[in-house]
Image (cartoon, rainbow over all chains, first blue to last red; front, top):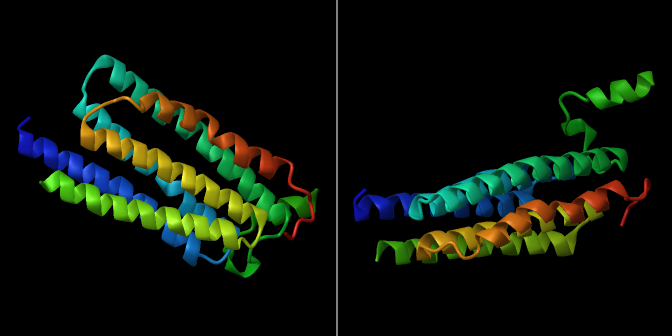
Length: 114
Length: 89
């Protein structure tokens, strides 16, 4: 791969990760309740991480680097949804949400039938 | 030259994202908002470390990324798990 193409790939992936972090920050400021802020917050945790770690793996392509990058992405993909799920459930239980913004509320129906 | 411009632009975007997360952490209004904001701050730090590695072509901080990806979850998880049922702070 030529030097220019290499630099362009690096630039695009770094800017993609930075755009994810910027979007998460703006979403945290502008969204109205915990659940929608959670939606904005979980994007850089996966997509930003995948962009920058793929960038590192491309720049230093070796078995050790690629293995470590795959491990990082797998562990992040295992742990981030777990935290997001627990925070979302806690937000529902403590009523930190706007019910009028929900299109479907399946949890309420299940709680009512219990 | 192009990568230097990219580094400056990306730094500004990371900084704005981090400042927004800190603002949400200070303002709240609930504990869960602060937890989410701290998660975003950790994700931003991970992305900054990775972007610095990518731009400078080294792999020195990859183990730091691995540890952060593994253990960044513990704080928000324990707060969400042990939150009092009626919390308004």
